[in-house]
Length: 496
Image (cartoon, rainbow, N blue to C red; front, side):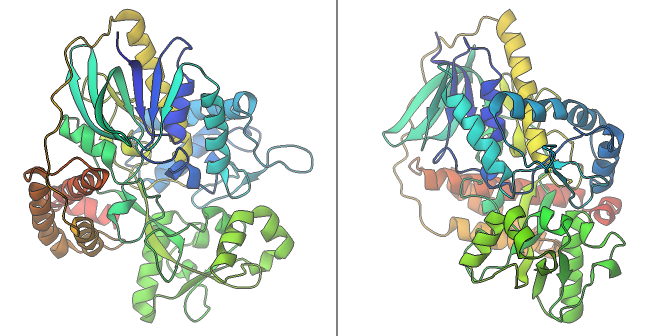
């Protein structure tokens, strides 16, 4: 018998929700590279978009808004599944998992507005929605006897064998193998490849790299979303987010002269989709010769601001900014990956028994630019659909890994410093809000050399080595995509 029926890599919303959707007799292992709460899901502020109020909203409007934001490059079948099935998953969070969304004085769910949405359809828990959902899912999963957790455990390899996989894991005791019949990758994004990102420290593209090494198809890794309003801190690579909802509640964006400028670039102003706002900021910085930009919500008053955005208020206060009185310094930085491991509508990859959900997957729902607050919805819907397909297969297939585990890795060489810094410099020069195509070609040569060194030098298997290899792999795949697509002038115009 296998040690586990299903191994899930990642403890964010996608991983936890997938674990909770399996039958009680299914043995599930959830791996977390660091502590269970260190993930991008936990950091999500704004909320989850869903048509739960059908009197003032409609599925077709949500689809239309997503298509507009995605440049009409979305996968329509996946998008229809997302929008039609999503509300039931969101309501299930409330009814079965105890998730508390904000409510008005009549106890109705309070909806907010975010950029690109034509209706108020964002359910939220103040400005810490991701924390609320993740913590409630985690509590529910910990109460299930069929779900096992391993923290500080890095999934370093997957060896496909008859009946499943041998998974190589690196934990605090060292390297060892675990057998499983199926694997769901819920490993999040790639933000740590960039000099500045809103992503947590675990976002190094490990799941995408593993899938690629197994031969799974990846798609649209070059479609990176840069959030326009990350806090412009003086130092540190991880930038905390000033939620889209702040603009949804009336904040205005101003340049170094205190002038509102967004209407000069797009009639939707501050509520234009993220890619539009980010590019507008870059264009305005070129026009003014200055990178100082601010978000101003002081007009809403101190009482409203502290009640609606308590976490952002406290976090900015730590940086010396009282957002009830002061403008918030902001600038675009890396935020989200629209591409990833290519999957079908059940999260199935092109490798047998390997599934993916959440940010590391490419369902096609986002098109070229994700509409605000669709990410948590995607994680819920497609994680659940992964479990449908796996459970169906388990009812009809006998799965058992009977072959012996692979040999243990023998690498001894210590990893030299500097690889990750080099990758961040390469991608920062080549593929930011306004790409530099000359730097793309030079960067591809550099990243290919780095990746070759990492693969061919008999390094010891450590977390530092695995993350450096993942970042070099993602950087190389991304830039290769750009070079291959470059002759297609139309897509460049569409994207930029």
